[in-house]
Amino acid sequence: MERLTLDVAILGGGLAGSLLARQLRRTLSQLRVGVFEKASESSYKVGESTVEIASNYLIRRLGLSAYLYDRHLPKNGLRFFFDTPAKDAALHEMTELGTVALPFHPSFQVNRARLERDLWERNRADGVRLWTNVRAHDLDLGSDGAQHRFAFSGDGIAGSCESRWLVDAAGRASMVARVKGLRVPEPEHAIAAVWGRFTGVRDLDEFGPESFRARVRHSSRMLSTVHFCYPGYWIWFIPLKEGVTSVGVVGDRECVDAVCRTKAGFVDFLQRHRAVASLLDVAEMLDVGSYAQLAYSTTRFFSADRWGLSGEAAAFTDPFYSPGSDFIALENDFLTDLIRRDVAGENATAFGERVELYDEFMRFRHEATMLLYRGLYSTLGSYELYRLKWDLDIACYYNLWVAPYMLDQHLDADYLRAQLREKTFILQALRNFADLFRKVESRLRERDQLHRGNLGRFAAPLDHVPYFDEVGTPRTRQAVLARTAEAFNLIRGRALDLLDDLPEPTVRTPLPLTAFMTSRPLA
Image 1 (spheres, rainbow, N blue to C red):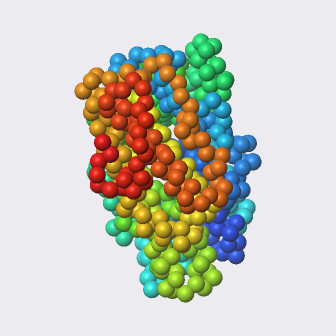
Image 2: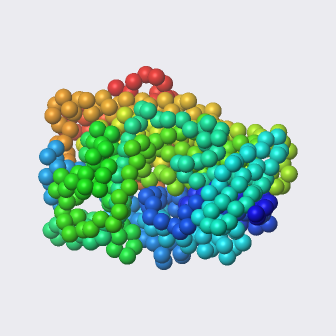
Image 3: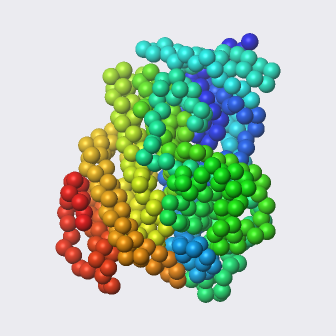
């Protein structure tokens, strides 16, 4: 029986665990790092689409820029199409919200199996010890300075391990979450998903008349994460290399029911949408997977007893906007910094305060993200309504989340404390806008106008984020707040125009930022 002693033991060699192992070797090369993975080889997983925070993490923190461009695909942003109630619009007839060029800030479409396999090879070459086809069990989490211990077995081997740090990155089956009772359900966001890989999907860039291709300046729609949006659900198309496309549907359980979550039911569901069916008419499905419930939370991400969670071992919000790898970037940054502080001998009081600060921020970040989704899936099927939501969400993402990450402000204790002092007001503002969007939806339904903008229109997704090239450069707090107030007033004004069915925008006196952060309704 093998007996191991490690500085950091990582349970799970998927994306979160493998990226953390690489980060630790690049940052704290003296540490003995081991990864324990239950699979014998990397396999297809969903979560192929990255957005700006994750991409910045992969490029800047982990040095994977050349690798990503060589072995995966650059992503042409997020792209959204809107349909008729009968789901019978041709692709080129649909209203489209999408890019006309590769975005200023890069992102990628990654083949998870290839990425994880390549990370295994790189990590091994860099001194990480990796065990595959082994199951960790009999976990004994240490406290008050004690080591963590667990056993592992499989593939003809058995052993035990003790480590100073233990990170659970083993996904939804998290052993730490189970042992510590950390998992928190999300009953208010009952969302299911089914997905598969397909070959032979038609080239999105060859569809429609010349005018359809010209309106995006012949930029590749195929390289985008494509969303077909409907009331209560959405369908994704994500290109992978070598002729494989990931296709999935996410939605309320009454839309994505048990029948839909079978192979035959999934194909039948997709075929009921004209534009989607036209992309799949000669395609072949390679495999299928599903979840009956996607979202859940956790009572804790990190502990002063030197354990932590990363990726889906901790929590999951929703795949819309592809935030999963953003959370991995934040969690791994926090874990690496905590391990660095511990190794450097930071005193227990300061270390404990830093753990609590990072943990509270992650719980705040999770809740802020959940407020983008809870009770709002019914709004996805209307271009006019969703355009409001998109413009708010993308402005907040760039202004309040991406920009600080690129400047490493999330590792600055003073910055985090300031954010957490304002969290009640930020969350209230997000709730207020969610209520406003639901009110607009109700009014559009009453007037039978929910789908009136779903054909024949086109808009670029960053029209109302003129400062995207400033993101990642130093800005004053006043500048950030001014951009926030500008976005909030713009979205509120357009929402009021929709509520009143006004043909032209109305000039309104801007509200102060504080007016959006009280319990008073926005309309």
